[in-house]
Amino acid sequence: MKRTLDEYMEIYQQEHSRPLTRLTHFVGIPMIVASLPLFLSKPRAAAALFVGGWALQLLGHRIEGNRPAFMGDPFYLLVGPLWVAREVYETVVRR
Image (cartoon, rainbow, N blue to C red; front, side, top):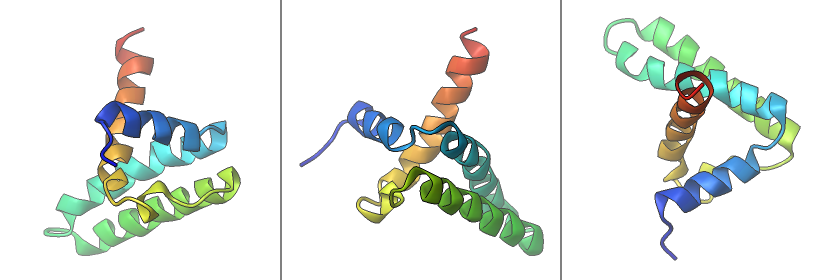
């Protein structure tokens, strides 16, 4: 079954309901995204950001008591950064 982006975002929101889980993702996802272009110029720093970001993600899922959404659908690897961007927009910009 194909989902719309809104459906993906809604499911992601439901699976990340605890404040501490949301915080670990709010910090961890940008760390992972920021690490990707750094691998070309600063591989050690990039690896530290990447591993640290994933550690925060896994901690959040341990707190939440569920598995990372991307394990069932790899598209969630893109949904996570979009979710963080939307959260920033709604919290900071739309104030």
